[in-house]
Every structure is written in structure tokens, then in C-alpha cells.
Amino acid sequence: MARGIETKCLHLEEEEGCSSNYGSVSYPIYQTATYAHPSVGKSTGYDYSRLQNPTREHLEKVVATLENGLDALAFSTGMAAITLMMELFSPGDHLIVDADLYGGSIRLFHNVSEKNGITFSSIDCYKEDVESYINENTKAIYIETPTNPMMNVTDIKILGEIAKKHHLLLIVDNTFLSPYFQNPLDLGADIVVHSGTKYLSGHNDTLAGFLVTNRKDISEKLRFLIKTTGSGLAPFDSWLVLRGIKTLGIRMEKSQQNAIIIANWLQGQNAVTKVIYPGLPTHPGHEIMKKQARGFGAMLTFQLESKEFALAILEKVRMIKFAESLGGVETLVTYPTTQTHADVPEEIRERNGITESTLRLSVGIEDVKDLLDELDKVFREIEGELHDQKES
Image (cartoon, rainbow, N blue to C red; front, side, top):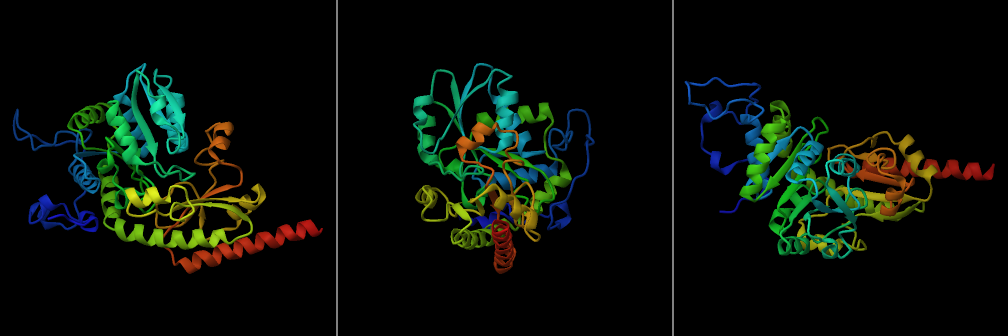
């Protein structure tokens, strides 16, 4: 009998009815570096926590279940997960990657992967002819959908068909929607990436990353790499993410509900020139999202009439925090130009639509009336100050 995703966040079906761990409802933190062996040639199943740890293993099983994958691997950060994933490729390999990606991914590809002999074609995967960029040494297509921060939506199923046709890997960063709203493996992806720091953890209190796959051969390669590089997630952090996942469903629903209301409010503000949120029917990816996801998420980007207005918002917000990251219970506003995409060359930022008047909002679970009250107060104050400056 198929389980709902809310139930999957709480229970591993194969462990129901077990009395292991003394019946503890909260999975224990196995804070140990090594494990005693009963005798030579015999093992408890665990040898050294760089290789595996019971708490991390439990978390990995939960995430694999949520993404309908064969295996999931938990890493110290999202970037650690992507860095290890790139070890699947060799000098001379070519990847097609989305032009609008998280700045850390762009930094990794251009400053580390290219140094190691891997080449990239950065294109708008949501609208360009991806197939025309495939050549003899192309090995994979790497996308985010929606993208960070411009919220471009790519049809995963179509890309999956292209990847299979040309024997390429399709890698999808699913951080913005989480497995609660979207499952790329079901749509043709081979590897799913998550910054577990974000929605999976959900409380801005730990760092984590995940790779999930439905292919045994990829799982075996990744398992060899994680034990070799030693980038696995620590036991306590694994427990924190496990705790966060228990409320993933209700957090995603509430955050999305708030995001839709705020997106509509922003559309009515004179100082806002553009609101980019896939949940708005005017978004070009709206229909694709309805087809391949169960929701639109709680991330939105908006453009202000000027750099001065954007910076003033960042200075005046109080309950809404001016901070990097996303996906926590608190609402955060981010300035991509100096934060998430600071290391991305200006010409690339501008090509992707990121300007000095761009703000990104990660909507949390506060009472939406309080969020609107703060935004309204901030907007009115700034408008009054700018008016006074013009008058003087």
C-alpha cells in the first residue's frame, strides 16, 4: 500500500514494529568515531564513521524514500555533495549546465572543475535547444528547477528523454522544492541534489547536503567516493536533519501559502517592477510546474525600481531577516549581488537578470499578516523618504 509523503517523513516502513534502539521514538545519535569488532573477520555492520554511521544511514534511508530513490548519501554541506558528484567525471568530459545556478555551483564549476579538465556549456535550459549543445564528450546535463534566483522552470521529463537518448546523466538540484513538492527521479533524472541545510533541515541550525539516485551503478561509485573523500555528514547533524524532516510537509504547505499571498501583494506595489514566482499564472513556467510538481514552493524573486529602494528594504526589515540561505521557518531576504552570487562575474549576473535592484525572498511560516504589515511599513517609510529627498 502506497504511503503518503507526510507519513514517509516520519516512518520508515521496513522498521515499523521493531524494538531496536530500546524503542526510542526519536532515532538515537550514535556519536562515535569507531566500532568494536566481535572478533577477526566479524563486524557489527559498522567499522568507522567515515564509512557509515547508524544515524546517518537512517537519515539516508529516509531521504531516499522521500525521493523514490535506490540510495541517498548525506554530506557535510550541499557544496560537498556537488563537489563529490563531480568526481564521477574525468578530464576531457563536457557538461551542459543551466546558466542560472546558485553562485556556489558556478564558482565550483569554473574554479575547480575547469581546472581539473572538465568543460561546460552554460545555457538557458528552460528555453534553448539543449540537444544542439551535445557533442562527443558530453556526459551530463545539470539543472536547477526552479533556478536560483531567477525562478526559471525547466521541463524535467523532456530533458530526461534527451539525456536517455544520448546516454547522458541528468542531474537535478531539487533544493527549492524539496521532495515534498517534486521528485525528479520519477521524471527521468539520474541524480538529485539537495542542500539539506535548506527545506529538509528547515530550521537554519545545521548544514547538510544529499545526492540521491535510482541507479545501482551510480550508487556504487558514489559510495566509493564518499568513503574515500570523507565528506559524510556527522551524527549530530544527521539527527538535526532527521528532526527537521518530520515537519517538512506542514512547513512546505504553510510557507507556500504565505508565499502566494506575498507575491500577489508585491505585484500591487508601485516600487516593484517585477515579481518572479512560479505560482503566479503569469509566470512562463507555471503550467510546467503544475505538470511536474505538487506545488510551487516558497521562494520568490522581485525587482525594485532602483538599487536605493532595494538597499533600503534590507536596512529597514526587522522580523524579516536580511540573511543568506533559505528554506527555514523564518522569512529571509537575500541580496544576490553581494551574497549568493557575489563571486559570479557581473556580466553573467546581468545576463541572467540579477541586478543591483534584485531581492530574493525565502518565505517562512510566520503569520502572513505580520509579514505583510512589516513589508507595508517598510515600503511606506522608504517611499516617504524618497519623496522628501526629491522635494528638498
